[in-house]
Amino acid sequence: MNILLLQPAMAASAIGGDNVSLFEPLALEYLAAGIPAEHDIRIVDLRIDPHLDRILASFEPQVVGVTGYTVHVNPVKTLCERVKTWRPDVLTVVGGHHATVWPQDLASPCIDLVVRGEGIGPFREIVSRLEKGLSYEGIKGACHKIGGRLLTTEPAPIADLDSVPMPARHLTSSYRGKYFSEWMRPLASIRTSKGCPHRCNFCAQWKLSDGRYLRRSPESVVEELAGIQEPCVFFADDESLYDTARMRRLAELIREVGIKKRYFLYARSETIVRAPELLELWRAVGLERVFIGLEFFRECDLEYVHKGSTVADNERAIAILKTLGIEIYASFMVRPEFTRDDFEAFRRYVRSLKLSFATFSVLTPLPGTDLYDEVKDQIVDHNYDHVDFVHTLLPTALPPREFYAECARLYERSLPLSSRLSLLRKIPLRDLPALQAKGSRFRRRLREAHLDQ
Image 1: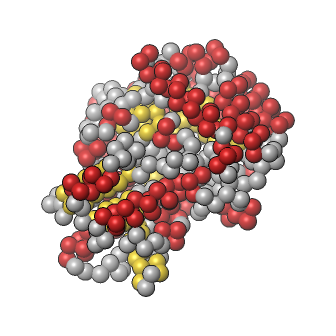
Image 2: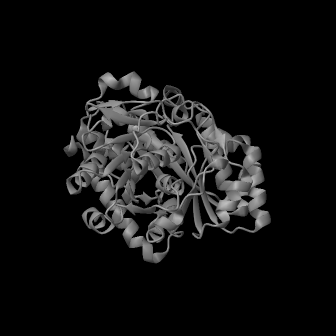
Image 3: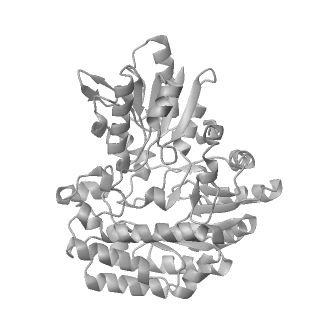
C-alpha cells in the first residue's frame, strides 16, 4: 500500500514561522516509523516541495496523512480537498496538535479520520484495517464520521517514550540540508521528553500529557544522536533540562561516546538558576544556544500567564548563560493591552539586558488552553491563518496600525548595535544576505499586519 504523509505550509497571510526557521517534520517521521515495512511510505514537506498534484500522480497513494497546528487548519483542509478531487476513494487522515485539542474543526467532508494524541499506534491500526477492509470503529484516538457527524474519542494513550521507534529520517533525506534555525544549519531535531510540569495558561502542552513529564532514557537518546548526520541538533522538548539528573547523565554519556554536535535546546529561567553547573557541563559537550521563554518584563504580566518564574529568575539566567558563553534565544510576549508607554518601557528593559537576539510574539489564546477559555468571548479574529503569534486575535489598546508598528519597533530598537554585531559574526558570510532579506520582509509584513484584519 502506498502511504503519503504531508507536512503543510502555512497560509500566505500567516507571518513568520517557516520563513524564520524550518524544523524537520519529526511527527511524520515517527508516524512513518510505526508502519510495517511492506508498505511504501513517502514524506513530502510542502514547505520545501509544494508540487502536490505531481506527487499524487506519480506516487498514487491509497492513504494520505496530514499533520498540523492551529495555524495549519485551513491549509490542511485545502490539501485534503485537493486529494479528494484527485481521487475520492483515497483515505485522508489528519492528526497533530489542533486535531488533538479541537477535533471538531476538522469535521470536513474531505477528511475521513481525525487522530487525537500520539498518532503512531492509531495510524498503524488504521492502515491495518484499511488493508483488511475492516471498520475503523473502536480505534483509540481515531475519530470517524457517521452520517456526516464526527464522533470524537479520547486521545490515544501516551506511550512509554523508550518504546517508540526511532523516527524514519531516511524519508526526509532529500530535504535535510534545508532544515535550520538562523545560523544553525543543517539542523536535525530530536525529542527526548514529552509534556511539561508547569501550568502556563497560554500553553496546552501540559494538558496533552495529562500533566505528566515523560522522559526517554539517556541511553536511548545517545543511541539516536549517534545516528544523526547533521552537525546541529535541536531538542524538540517542552522543557529539556527539567530533570537535571537525567540531563547530567545524558551529557556524561555524550562525552563518553565522543559525539560531537552543536546543540540548541529549550530551558526555563528558574531551571537554569537552580542548576548552573548543569549548563556548564552541557556547554562542554556542545551546547551552543538556549531558547528561554522570558515572556514579560513585569511581575504582574508573568503572574497573569501563570508562568511560575520571576523577573529576577530571568535576569539571573541571562547572566549565567552569558558567563558560560551560551547564545541566548530570548523569547518575549506582547500583550494586546499594551499602551505606548508599555512598549517604550519594554524596549528600554530589553535593551538593558544587552541581548544579541530576541523575538516578540503576541500573546495568543490558543484553542485548548486556559487562556482561551478565559478570553474566548473577547476574540475578534477567528481566522486560523492568523494564529501565527504575530497577528493579535484580541482587541488592542492602541489602534491596530500603531500596535503593529510598536511591535516592529521592538525588533528594531531593543537590541544594542554592539550585541547585534556579535551575533552577525556567528553567521557565515554567504548566509547573511538571505537572512537580512528575510528579516526585512518579516518587519515589513509585521507593520502591514493590520491590513489582514
